[in-house]
Image (cartoon, rainbow, N blue to C red):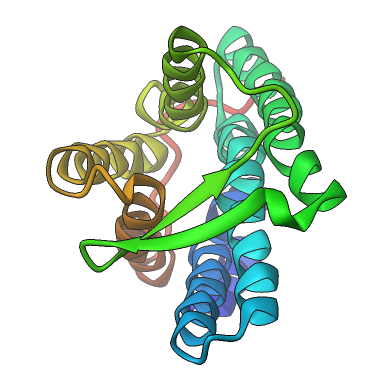
Amino acid sequence: MGIACIKQAQEQDKRYLPLAAFPLAFGIQQVIEGLVWVGLGANDARLVALAATGFVFFSHGFWLVWTPLAAASVEGDRPRCQVWRALAGLGLLYGLYFNLPIWLDPQRLSVSVHNHSLVYHLQLLVEPTRALSLFGYTLYVLTILAPLVLSGDRYIQRLGGLVLLALLLTANFFSAGFISVWCFFAALVSLYVGYVFLQGLEPRSQPPLA
């Protein structure tokens, strides 16, 4: 379905290509996390380390950049588009903050299982205080959610509503493995994107940027 969405976006409206890539990217991410489970079951520390690093690249890096870029790509309001692009830049810096320590020293990342969910433990170069951790958590969520929920495009908005619902369910019932479970639910939500492209895009509700 992921490849089919990309092909449909190329044929219908190339501005939706970043959005069309969501199902494929989530599919790759979930396969990688499946390898984490395989590695844990086989007691294969090398496989766990490699797969966990790949998963965190997506969860703590790729989506922080790709999500606001996808919103900016179809945004018809110039100031809002600039905000989404700025968030993508911020997401890039934030992603490097998470991923660079792991790339420099893979032992800074470990994985455990809690209530049948995976928990990823990251040791950052500078350990934040509790207040900074809360700020960072809020920034992480806003960088992903704001461009979706506040987008001027109806498809992005609907996706944002579903992702927000997935966030609330995860926070209330699966808080220990928040990142893993939210990404899993978001992958399911991305099926909506497949539905949109396979059904065919409707005429845009806002004019493109001049």
